[in-house]
Length: 266
Image (cartoon, rainbow, N blue to C red; front, side, top):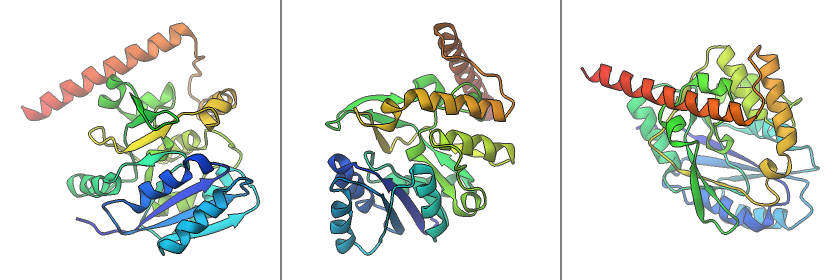
């Protein structure tokens, strides 16, 4: 199995309630060959003190303390600092399950070279209880890049990407939100491939009252729309009819994937 260094990057802004659990979920990984770059992005709560406590205990942590710059710029700062062969995302209110990186290395061993890697995730609430799995059954089991032409169903926190790629392109700092969706489409336009590991769910995405996806959903939708416009994609409004249409597309993609698998077995 490859023993490549993974650089984990996490930007923190006022997430003291969930931060310790997020940090420990990385430090307790069964795959130990990583560095953990944590940016305190001008937090006004106790986030910095929490990070400093773990920084004293584990020399794999690299702490960057700065005035608030926002998520996109902070991620680019962490990317430029990273020395790993791969770069993995982690959000400050989410949880990576213990075998997340080990499963990734096994995937590489079985499948070879990867550009971008992602998986499904569990949705958890404020008390870390699992509520459901995302994306839906049909989309995650029939995943292909064309499904991203309808809406973003890749969970940013699950992203692991070859370092050279993300260092060359970085996140688009014009995108305060949906910076991941813009990145996926930009990299795919240059021929980079998404490897989707539908069989491993090793990330827990927390939805709570202060989460970005809940507080800024309207802004995220506007930036998502901009991604479609910039990439000359058809823009679908999130109407009832279109949501139903997306479900049909998911099911058809799932059926096609099943047929392709049976064909390969013959």
